[in-house]
Length: 148
Image (cartoon, rainbow, N blue to C red; front, top):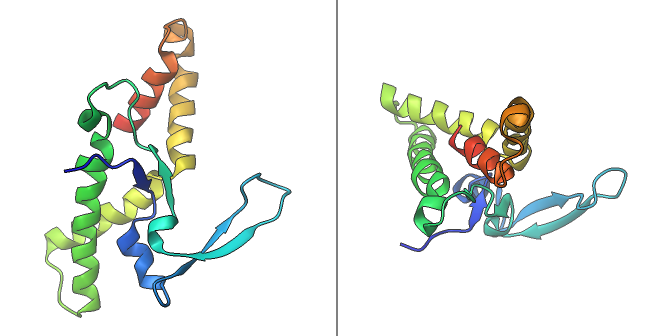
């Protein structure tokens, strides 16, 4: 299995539901406010992702540093996709599938770049007096945010 570096905070399977002829609209404001928004039609694989968003810089093993993407979000997405397919097929959902769907929806709230950054900033703020002198303080806070 290859180690993914393109981490979708909006999973591709989910984005495909809004695709027309395989394309969705991507809106970006690359330089922030007050600069303009740019719109472009792209395939879902080209939207809603950042390279290494969930990479833990404190890990040296490629598979371990990508564990959040490979072990956590891939499983949440697979389970969520199955639950959504059941709903679309008008099948009743067992409790386990309802929990999978709830877990998927909750993951969307906490896996965005801004949310990962928010958690990292809060941890950095909380531990700055005790650990900020460590040479790898930022890596430690990033890894802790991802584990959280």
